[in-house]
Length: 142
Image (cartoon, rainbow, N blue to C red; front, side):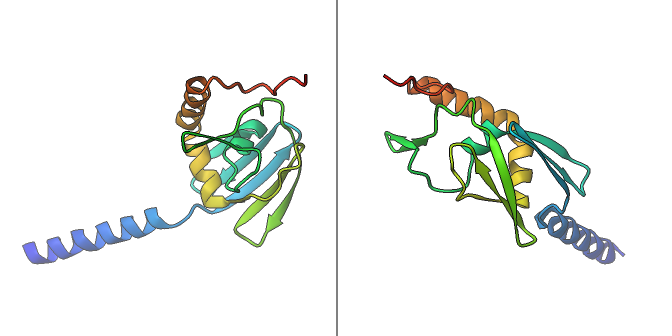
């Protein structure tokens, strides 16, 4: 009897682990140009992600990143806007920002990660800017 219960418990743990490993299924993506994107997932989570946040955490390599002591830092994007978005297959979206950055593909899994961790990621971003004496505001032209 104990062996059956142990096998059932192990099977339940495997099912739970497999379900947790599945990427979230997107239900809705709504652009609110120029300032945000709203994403809603089948697990019931809904996230409002600002253009600045998405631009800073774009998954693409970018020439406008400053590398400081090996740390990649994007700064000066407080007023960046979203111009458009293009569906990429059934797994993600490419967002075109008004600074003409458009090479990052945001997968549904990555958008869920960003939304789920928005506050800690934002806090870390601000700390990194302060650490390097940088600002969210664009540099003034001389």
